[in-house]
Image (cartoon, rainbow, N blue to C red; front, side, top):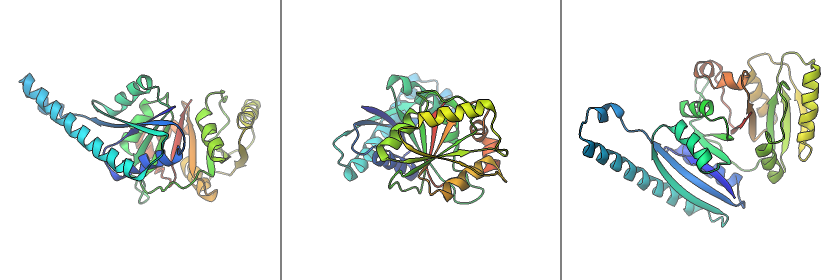
Length: 280
């Protein structure tokens, strides 16, 4: 049974990520863990020397979080009747990224679904600060970032950008393959580069990638990049009418650059479809 984490701050975009997770995994045995992480104001607590009163503050925050999680779960269960889906709620005090890292091991998570505010203009970001922090911290579990206005209908096409610089291990693409096989999706491999001549190492990696994707429909594409890598990816995804973009989180790649907030702000990486980030 899949173990899927649904972090929520009780916003509309977090709820949209929940519904995307439900639809993406319809008729599959899954446990959905609805998580709210709350961070008490440590500045105020440190000035309060009464340990009993500090405990009361934590208790109140926890009870409020549980109450809101139960309300959210009620909203979810009113619109879904999938017998293969079960739900758990967790309210934890602490840091979001650290808490998620702990739960990956504790709950043996298969994927994390995060709602993002989405881009409403050129200066708006698809990747919000919480998502960026989680992507930088969490490197051992697939993460799906879902834009606020995304309405999941089907997973017909997935764009996989690559520079063929890295070897594709057997387990690396497991999540992508399972999604593509379940939805009978086409994977569009997009060669991201300014020059198309491949080295011997890149040719070998491309051949391995083709072998890894043998069980699903896949096509290879390349387009000259005239702007930034991020803009080239989003433009290609739009042209392909893609339902998802998948990136592998290697060190020293455009993925790392995109998760450094100052660079993200300059690039303005915003897409109207979910972004699936796989561990390297």
